[in-house]
Length: 248
Ligand SMILES: [Zn+2]
Image (tube, rainbow, N blue to C red):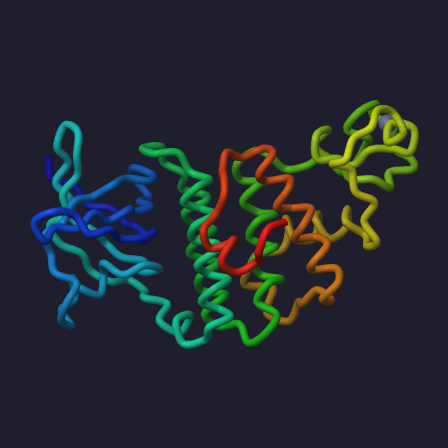
């Protein structure tokens, strides 16, 4: 069956016989592996459509157990991301994170849209790229149904004295619940995590142009979010994270 779909290239892998496998995040089918004998060399339209970060339209042949790429056309290449090393590293991280977040063959149109918005905002952004990455993470958790509980204690439902963020309980916890047990995955953030998470989840990514977190807040929030995501989403270890951030 022939079909076409919008997609974003997660990555490509060389396969035997000069063929390539593309790992493609498609709007219609979710994450799929697609075989291709199209060459990446040259300046043809199809060649550009095979590169990571590219958002394109892809003509596929859908077999019973495989997909083959017949042709591809770039919608947006986000090429400016590749012109800035810091942007490139941050965007690579988000691409890999998204790849790990989505199961195969399950359409995730909202996350697909969010990734396009992220790449577009990152391409334009001038500094403090990390803030945009954190905003993407917060929004992705909301889309995937793993957003932390912020309005009341995730343990007992209390609405006062919510000073702690508990990974295992899935959100803010009160002072009483914090003292139960000996949990190392509880943080006492030095910033207003509740309002930042709410603001990040509500504000569209294109509205982040002038928003940047202070360095220490950004670092602390990143640490909490990464722990939270690895607890709730099956993302394992990310190559780009080890490369760029070190262990956390
Ligand atoms: Zn409580």
